[in-house]
Length: 154
Image (cartoon, rainbow, N blue to C red; front, side, top):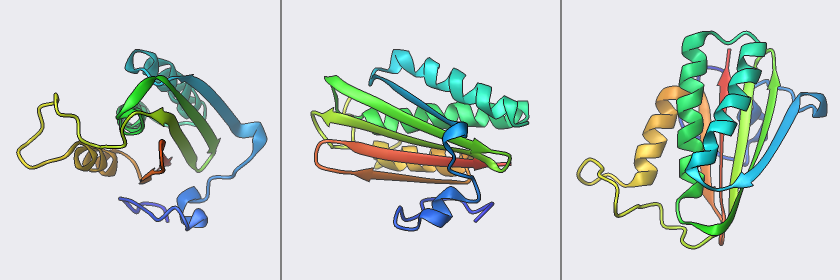
């Protein structure tokens, strides 16, 4: 489903992968505390992979912004004990990043201290940003964790 924008049901794995091969030899896994000051590690690692498969500067810039939003979406309501786990798969077709954060204090997607446009919730803003920057994404909440993924194709 190359070129399709917006959320895709996670039940449809073929659409989620969008032609990107799931291969252990093209897989990177990161596990780190769910703290914003560490997300630069995620941006750097995934941007390096994107450059290695031929993404141009503008596409890599979009991907870096999308990664910030992906991490932010997953980490809303994170506690000091929350852990962020990321898995990145890549092929010549593009990149798929899967992110999950466990041990959330709250699964509320609204942060009261952020200034947002009137009537807009944080999760709506995240979805709008991701829709503008990547080819497909998904965000889901479980009991005390949140999972999100994005796909950027060439």
